[in-house]
Length: 399
Image 1 (tube, one colour):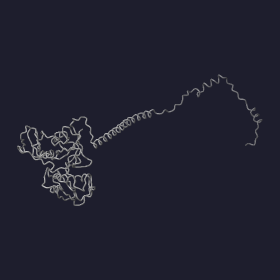
Image 2: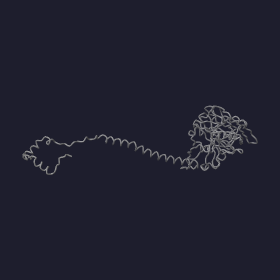
Image 3: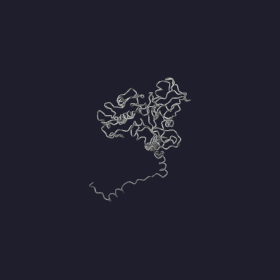
Image 4: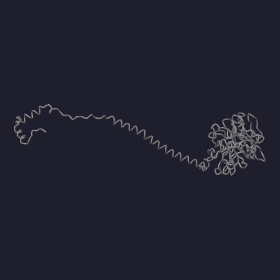
């Protein structure tokens, strides 16, 4: 702070000594001066702020629309798929339940259309007495694209049988009722049935009156297929007679006039069973073009090897057995203990059913020895097993 001491009297004195400043201009002169000042005459426009581009909002709007067009249909489709999946699941569940209970309802009792379903649980290549407690067995020989015949057994629920067939319909009645309803191609076979003939019976004889346009005698192979087919179809009859439409003797180009009836072997055909692979990949059991054997031991021994390129053995490599008939029972003894649980289910079932079907074609039961399990699937190996009544079971149920 300065050493000089200022007080109010000094300040007041100095202010009085300052010269007085006076403006001698008039009001008009001041106004005119202000008008002439260029700084005050310039137009003062408001400062414009730089505007933002209008494109980003437009682009954003377009992007939003595009996004909605993608999301909304996808969302709707997903909802539809969920709904359809739900419907499909419900329908599948209903179908499974209907198959398991065999409770298919018919809208028209007179409708002859049917559908078939492969027996899958339990897996089996043969029909046993327990399978026909509440079913009727309909045997038929179906044709393949390799000019072979495969014996099929359709199981028809007894409660679905038409009243006109009676309680225990025979093979002719069943054939005339159901042969034209089987979708053979859907089952992996070729169209072959119904026969181009009128089918009837007289006692234990089947009579086939062929139409004039039949083609069963175009070659020896077609005639052989016809013979094998009727053998597998008309079980329970002793013979079959081929006739023309007017009931006179028929003439086949390959063999000439046929006057005598042909014997039907039925279930006792003395044949061995092998594996046959259909064009759709399904394995079935069949005989080797109807080849017959004198004894059951010979047939069982022969079935250990594949007879040709069409049929293959059901006995897996490394497995062997002996067969000996004693008092009407065929004892099949495996060389080594056979553990069925270590085999594929299909492979094990083909082996067992093939042996049992072969023995049954001689009207014999089988007793197995050297099997690790006492019970397996529906088999009880502690005693002779029941004879199968047919091969390759499928259900035939009225729609």
